[in-house]
Amino acid sequence: SGRVPTMLLEKEGDKALIENIAEQLASRIACDSVHSNNTNFLTIDLINDIHFRRYWANLLQSYIKIPEARYKSLFHSKVLCVLNVQDGSYLGTYVLDRKQKTYGSELTFSVGRPGLWLALTDDLRTTIWEYASKSWDPRTRPWATQGPSRWIHYNDPATGDLIESFVCPVPSSTICGIVIAASIPAH
Image (cartoon, rainbow, N blue to C red; front, side, top):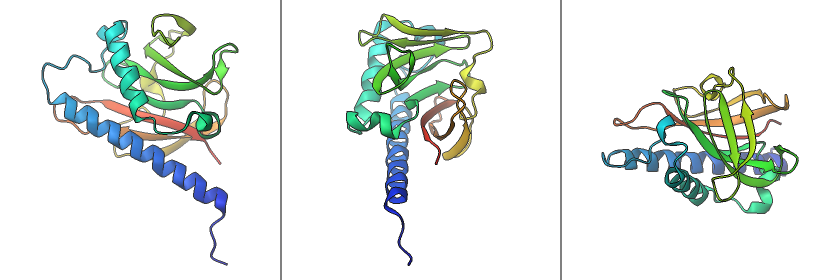
């Protein structure tokens, strides 16, 4: 009949929304990078600084334009995350069940570096969930790649679920190796 199923239209609309959010954030980071005195760029040296955490938590929250009630149904795990592929520093928002320490529906800010990932309480100081492993390095994740923006499929390392992540590099001549990612369940 030529009609597209409603579920597909919603999925494709959701994907377009995620792409738009990631691309807008990438443009903002690229624009901000022009200011040489801006110290809020992602580096391992800054991930423990509370002012740095607040800057990024507020910035990411300002770009997440999806009603809170939809977090769990739309996102698999990563809502909006940023990675420096040069040094492995990483931060982002996840949907987690903070008590069960699994994926869930509570928007949670996190920071990481090779060997350590921390999910934080809303004060951005207290760790809710810590994952430490010498083998964990966000730069080895399938979405931690340079190249054009695109959707990629892979299995989540924690659950084995097949997911899709939208990967969006930051286009900048003053910083390099910054990648933005968001993930949804694959259908």
